[in-house]
Length: 214
Image (cartoon, rainbow, N blue to C red; front, side):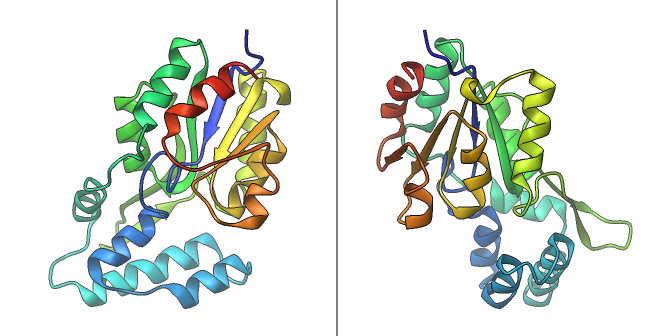
């Protein structure tokens, strides 16, 4: 029987196809946030400042109102990674729980978590604000996944050896540090796969055996 009781998944680029659901929205509008992303990665702007700048660029580019319903319709076009559904179902059959811990958007995480019978996700709310503009409630900052995972494991009364983490970028490294088994998937970022127990490319179904026999 596996020691693993819970698998903590990043969402974007891991179980869902696009590297970033935020970038998916930029692609839709034909906008570019690379300068702001650089500042965010360098910790020079906050999550709130980053998202506020994103929303402003979308609004400036769009001929119609950019609200929660519109953005969610864009996110609805996102598809799972090959084998994602089967991986989650296979883990559940082995008695292993699953959850999203993502800097992505909660609407998207809720949608797939519900469809795949995962635990309630930890993600960020992008919702209509009282001022008529989209606003974000940060529940899982890309800069602070580690503390969020600490709280999760404390709540579930799980130790490090009982947890696996699956991710694809450097913001997932704090998850890897807190997991007994860490798996980098579909990534060419050296810092990520060199700090994981496994590096996997391709169909995710192959991970069922790795996780369930750990």
